[in-house]
Length: 84
Image (cartoon, rainbow, N blue to C red; front, side, top):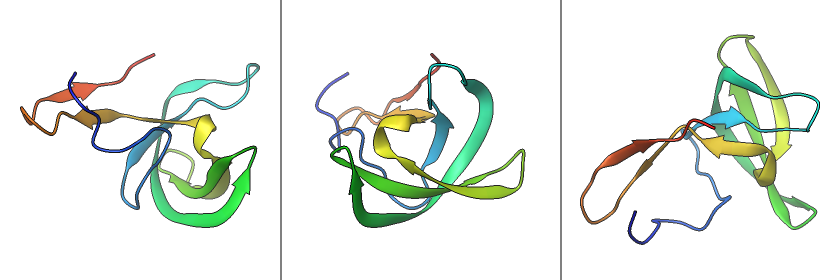
């Protein structure tokens, strides 16, 4: 898919994400919006505050626990949906 437009897992405010989370909990139907990034790191990943649309609450997660819902190829502008 070409050169990524940012290193993963790195998110910006407004990104639409899935929760990868822990092995015992994965919800591919739950969509969230990154509302802020925290300079604090957990196991080398930045921490993000995410508002979960379906449940209406905000939580804090490391970048490794989140997956972008879509990616945009910077050269072709094609959009690819990530569905694991």
